[in-house]
Image (cartoon, rainbow, N blue to C red; front, side, top):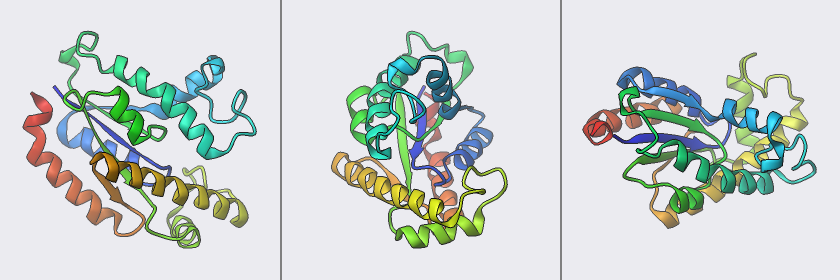
Length: 201
């Protein structure tokens, strides 16, 4: 059995693609946002905190590195074949804070594959325009001012470029989703369907 992590920056389509994979292949969809929120509110001393308490006043890049280094071992334990009941079927794990370097350090690619969704091939201004065009009331960015949105998009582009650099160095798959997202998703789904025996064994 092989699980799949769909990782990358916020608003890159991770949850949308994860739900599609889970539905198409009959896998469990696990949203790490909810698990990280539980750590953040109940066990902030672990360092798995997005800036509410122990990581307050740290930059988004610092927080990304801190959480990634903590969540890597957690994911390794979570996907350990000795602990995981195979009858539950594979998981598609949807998450933000996992750097490629920590995936390579902590996870076994024979047990858990990964793909990254990025938005680093655009400027912050272009990312902001695209985000605003497609925002819905369910998105956390919907109520942001233009200045807040532009600042956030600057972080997303910066982090995407870091992730892309690490993916290229480590030979991990990544996809840019700022433009033509549906076409990108169709290509990923087609490849997964071809590779599904590898993921089910």
